[in-house]
Image (cartoon, rainbow, N blue to C red; front, side, top):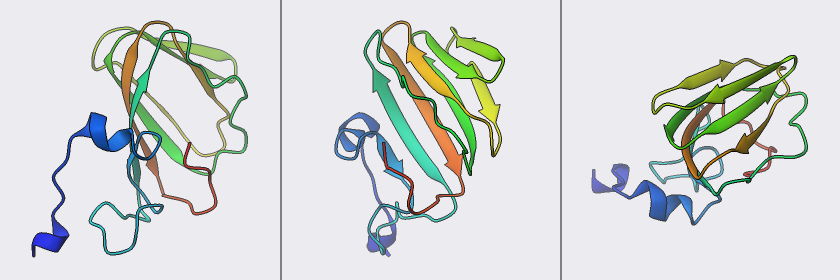
Length: 120
């Protein structure tokens, strides 16, 4: 049963896979392998951004602010996450980008975990 349990530290493990802790891109047999969901622990310095918008998103996403100030840009709307626990959810087909206004840590959950998408 121990091969079905993984204990780690989000900061250390996230650094190994561009922030991603769980998803289809983890090796089969690893308890962190999932085709249902992806989870990312994102640590972003001030000014870090996704300058090019993600277009044609095929997943639903939840982004929760752990610390800092983090802005998510959505079509016709800019959402500022300023207090720990602030979050935003967007559905399939919603284009987006983001920017860290301060040093920020965010937890992102996306579903389903779609093969072929870049891990970044």
